[in-house]
Length: 315
Ligand SMILES: Nc1ncnc2c1ncn2[C@@H]1O[C@H](COP(=O)(O)OP(=O)(O)O)[C@@H](O)[C@H]1O
Ligand SMILES: O=P(O)(O)OC[C@H]1O[C@](O)(COP(=O)(O)O)[C@@H](O)[C@@H]1O
Image (cartoon, rainbow, N blue to C red; front, side, top):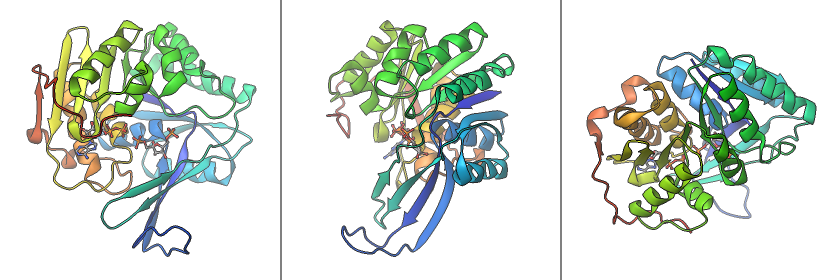
């Protein structure tokens, strides 16, 4: 069982546009709405892979009710914590050449009582889980140490923790020893406070985060693939993708694949890369099903191309 926690979930609305022109009234050629937020995406990908999952998230207003209904349609058990505010809507604008413009809303403010109810909702289910995946930004009202508290409580209950967040929420949780963290290149650079230009820079940054408390670091490097740095060494995985349709949720699909494959080792890295590669070839934040995965296109190696420049160096 993989339980996910999404403190700031969203309805992800995607509009397809003939062209994005600032200052004009634009008519969408198509639109869709998906349940969103990083942990919810992980649950969607875990469910698509045929594994049991529960999504814990604060839900409020008509948007929260719709999100719960959409999760039900994806056969995901939603453990919604009622809140007074309304769940946010994030908007993605897609142009025919694949360019994505994303607007993420701030989301509702969570009260102290709601924050405690959220921790309780996780804690009461911790014993029955293999992994707890804590994912995404923290909403207003939750302090940067909130994930640190969640990791500490979940460890006391005996659960393994995967953490996918950024900034202070990530760095504050490292001393509590999350078992896996899943930064992308920007998040990795932010956590070590320096830009990353090569795969070797990413390996050094991942090793530094292990030194600060992370168990394993699954670092996703966009088109360049993924790195796994753990107590046994460093591994690099990649897969060729000819046409990228949407990278929204690709990191979430990767983390789901990694955890569903056991959450450690080179084999799980290969499954994570296969999920990322499949996710970017699907529209919006659609999560891959087993039939979408092509493990034969994935290569993993201990011979890391340390000098290879990142396709998108971080700033
Ligand atoms: N342009 C791309 N081409 C091929 N694979 C990609 C591309 N973008 C993402 N991926 C795959 O999806 C994974 C996650 O994407 P990434 O952008 O690193 O994460 P996040 O969504 O967390 O920002 C990558 O490690 C890679 O396996
Ligand atoms: O919690 P955040 O950082 O605001 O991000 C939420 C957004 O991220 C997503 O989970 C997608 O994440 P990624 O594209 O980074 O994998 C969307 O579903 C959601 O709209």
